[in-house]
Every structure is written in C-alpha cells, then in structure tokens.
Length: 152
Image (spheres, rainbow, N blue to C red):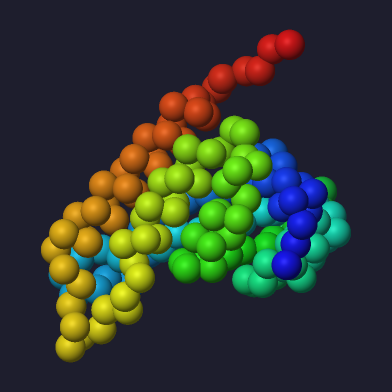
C-alpha cells in the first residue's frame, strides 16, 4: 500500500496533467448508450506514466510521433472500477479536480453489478449514468473555456 506522500504525489499529477472523464463508448448495451469512467495521464517522458502503471495498475501505452516535429508520448490509463478505486485513494489530496473525482466515484458506484443480456441494466442506473456523464462534461466546460488565456 502506498503512503500518504505517494498518494498526494499521484493526486498532484492528476491535478496538473491528468484527465478524469466519463466517456460515451461506441458499444451499446441493448438500446442504450454505454459509458465508462476513465483516468489517464499522457506525457512526453515515460517516468511518471510508468510509475503510475507500476503502482496503480491499468494500461500503459507508447505512441510513436506522427512526424519528426513531434515527440513520443507515453500514456497511463485506468478504466471502470479500477479508476473509481484510484479516485477514492487520491480524493483527499486533490485540489483542482476534486469535483471531477467525486462525480467519477459516484458514477462508478452505480456500476457495482455487471449487467449482461440475461440481467439487463435497470433504467434508473442508465439514467443516472447519463446524468453523471453530463454533469462531468459541464464541469469540464466551465473549467476549461476555449480560447481562455491564463494571466499572471
């Protein structure tokens, strides 16, 4: 288990370089859209994404640059229940993305059961997922206005 210092470091990485999102994925579950909680960090240096992968699991990717002008990118990604558990661990240490993490944790709490064709997902869960997806989308839009310039 990681100590508070390492968890606060991970939270700082997420606050500064990370992404917390509820993505609408193309695969549908019956007639309804499917959503997935994701947390990821993409950087041009492999040190932090590989550290996150080693300590929290998930997936690790290396992307080749499309041209010589670009650098190689490294990405660490967590999805679904692993993302929810990770957000619970770092929530007390987050500063900027605490609201996003809380929505992500709430979203994942609706997804405790695995729904298959013989056990369809209840409409209430489907609606709750869609509402939380929209809430997080609105939070992102409020925080990151296009064309906004930071001034010191």
